[in-house]
Length: 164
Image 1 (cartoon, rainbow, N blue to C red):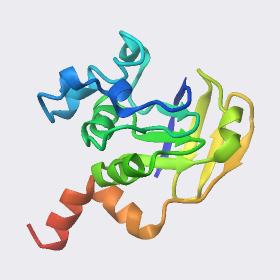
Image 2 (image 1 turned 180 degrees about the vertical axis):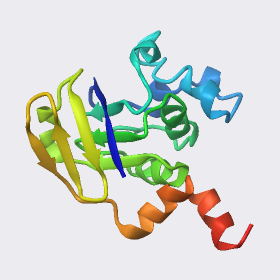
Image 3 (image 1 turned 30 degrees about the vertical axis):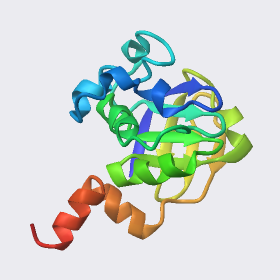
Image 4 (image 1 turned 90 degrees about the horizontal axis):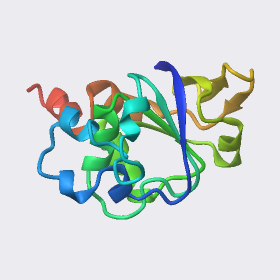
């Protein structure tokens, strides 16, 4: 579970309405939501993102409402992982349930600059800043959560376990 991509930094207390504004909640289609990802923060933000790029956030990322559309929009935008100082609790759970990798790094998020090239190994709990050579360690994704991620989220995990 290694992902290499460009870091896109955002600030503190980015709420789910900034991630995907309410006016776009007429669908659960990941591609459609992804096309409008972060539109509440900055119009056209998504134009800078390429598949496998990495969101880097300050504290309390994903605060606000409990909408599952927020992690779906990040995945639809091609962002498979968010590295943050901290996450809002409900977003953290929703993210994993939707198949989004979330890694909490505390103050070490400061070592990851906008535009830096990163290599994230969620299983080992390492984030290498290829641009600076800095290596950050964090709690790796536990095996049971990796199973959910590998299945594509909680719904697909349950279907697989039930033999559907």
